[in-house]
Length: 567
Image (cartoon, rainbow, N blue to C red):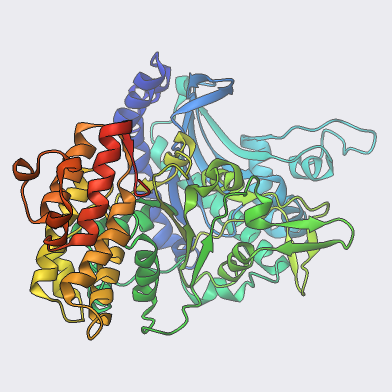
């Protein structure tokens, strides 16, 4: 419950200790208040409440720059909805030793507030005057000769102040003089402020042609609910995709929890395919049909800034050249009833914290906007249309980044990991893959693949479902040209052995020797050193091409302490 003991968790010393105390004592109290607000709003504001989302502060520390961090000094619960830029907050401040409930508004909604106040002043005057009489309005402004007199309403002073961007207006309850029914007072204040916030959002929708107000009436909520996981799993597996039930459920939940999910893992385990199949399953798109709610963006190694992802403003023509990513966001913003899915393929070929910086920041801010670098609030789009800046990251967009971890990629920073759920796809279920594989499978070929795969995995160079499928198709295609064994021999040489490389280590040496045992058909105690293997032994090997290459790779490892496929 709301109490001084809960509030004083913001006075606990130490960054980690304070966050733990807040989560243990203060968060449950605000969560209980949020539930009380929900029940009251469902009864008193049934038309607008289904549009609203509830969120809590997630920042664990204050970043002072240059690596300096301080404990948080406030904690809040917010009630807001798309297109955002304003919302109602209940905050507990350790600095002020007060509980605050008010409407928070950012610069992007100042013009909307001016339109609302100018066109419907009598409607909103009671709550505006009550805030001026009982509460407080906070905004930064430089006084000028043209500013209204101090006796004017605070809203007139704010709108007239050119330097004023951010606004907080509401009611303050000091800890030393809290009302007996604090939860009831806070709930009543939130319900008094929500209609003003809703009117601001309606004004923003009316002013934005890409987000007409009629959409607000079409469906409560924002982004829509996906089908049940059982239906999604059935549709995904019907497409012949191999994935464990736990991984699929984890991915499903992660997409509902955070707008960013990262899928690292070995090449060929189906990371990119999972993103498409899930989007198809969520929207009931049949195989082979285009999915208008899905976009795959191939990240390029030379991406160094946000313009590589978002597009750029051309100062010579005055047009904004939007990327496919940005145009997809515009489509999603204009269609909030549906969930849109983006796959950033090979996310870490470039540094994500560089080109994704505006998106990552938008995910953590109340208004959810990012700057496009245009000189005006609205700019024409090259090819037709217009775009607003700052632009809001639509709440109905889910972004998944696929990641390969090798020498060609960058490590993932804490900034990125803090904003994402990371789900690793590394396990290869051979039994499940064979059961779902539609083509014919030779038993001897499969037994050899099943023997080779764990050896390559133990060496740290595994191969996934894509490579296995291609090997099986190669063997099938070779009918009439090569025997299944000869075709598989070539595939082991062409698709497995090029992965094995590195300096001499027990791990690598053990893998090369085990593979040579399999392909030569003779255990190591019979052939001893690689250099001692004769041409006659290679000719008699069941997989002679692979055995010959493995012998050369082991010979180079013995001689140089390093080996690769090109030995």
